[in-house]
Image (tube, rainbow, N blue to C red; front, side, top):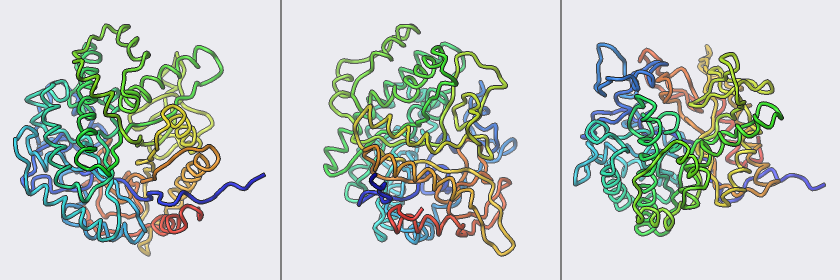
Length: 481
C-alpha cells in the first residue's frame, strides 16, 4: 500500500489570520469612523447587549468597557508583529480592512486618505518579507452610520456604498494585494444578524423577510466586488468566506438524519450556493415559499450573480455540530455561534467548543465534492487559557496537539481524498480580543500579548512554545507535525 504523502503542495499559503476590529486599536485615529465593533462592550454578554431593543449604538463608558478600542495596538506595532510573523515563515497573512478607516461614515463620496495610507504601510511591510496579504473586505465592521441611518444591509443603498468602498481599495492596492474575500462568515447572519447584516432581530417577522432581503443585497454587493476585482486586478483571486461546521445526525433515526441534512443545507450551503454556483438553490426557493418570504429581486441582480461568481471558497472551521429533531436543554453543546447537542465521542475546549479534527476532513470533502473550486481554511484554532510560567515561557502543548491533528486532517484530505486546497491561516496567530466575548483570556495565538480582561498589561509580545512548532511545520511544508 502506498505511503501517504506527508507534505503539502508547493506554493501552499501557510500563515495566520486576524481581523482589524480585534487587533488594530487606534479606533479614533486617522479620521476613522465608528463601526459595530467599536460599540461592542467587553464581557461574555456583549452580543446579547448589542441585540437588546433600544440599544442606541453609542459608546457609554459609565456602563461598559470597550477592549476593541485598543485591541493589541497593531495600529502602532504592526512592524513588530509582522517581523514575528516573518520569523515563523508565514507565506500569507489574513487580515481585514476596516471599512470606517476608508469611509468613516460609509456614505461619503471620497475615501479617507489617512486610512488608505495606513494600509499602504501595512502591505508594504508584508511585502518586505514576501508575505502575501489575504484581505477580508468586510469583517463584522459595518459603519455605525449605515446601521443607524439606513438599517444596515436591509437597505439597497448600502450596496452602492459598498461598491464605492471596494473600488477605492482595489484601485489603491491593486499592486499590493492579490488575494481577497468579500464578507467574513457571511452565513453568520442566520445566527447573528447584528454582526453580519447590521441589524438586530426584534420579532419573528424580522427573522425572515428582512434577513433574507439583506442577504440578497450582500450577494449583489459580493458579485459587484468580484466583477470589479477581476477588471481592476486581473491576476487577483477573490473568494467568499463562510463558517462551516459539518452537521452530524445524533443517531441512525431517519428523522434525525433528515433534520441534520436540512440544517446543513440552510446554514452551510445557502450562501455558498449563490456565490459559487451563481444562483439560488431549489432548496432555498422552497424554504422561501414555506416561510412566505417574497424578496425584491431585479432581473439584473440574478444576471450579475450568475456571471460573477467567486474564484475560491474560504471558510472557518472550529467544530462540528450534532443534531436531532427533538432536543432538551440538557442535550445542548456550546460553540462559536452554533449550538447543537453534545457529541459523546468528542472532547471540548475551555469554552465548551467540541474538538473534532476529523470533522475538518469531512468539511473539506463535502465542500470540494459540491463545488469543485479551490478551498482555503482561513480560520481554525484553539481558544484556551494560557499560563505564563515563572521563567516567562508559555508551554501551550494543548494548542500544538489541537493544530497538529487538524493540519494532519487537511494533509489527508489533499493527499488521500484529492481535495484542492490553497492554504491555511490559523485563527488568532497573535493573541487578540475575542469577537464573541470581548475577552483577552481566550487566547489563540502563537504570540502572547500581555493584555488582560480588565484592560491592564504592557502589550509586550512573547513567543509561545507553539511559535517554534508552527515555524517548523511551515519550514518543512507540513512534513514535520
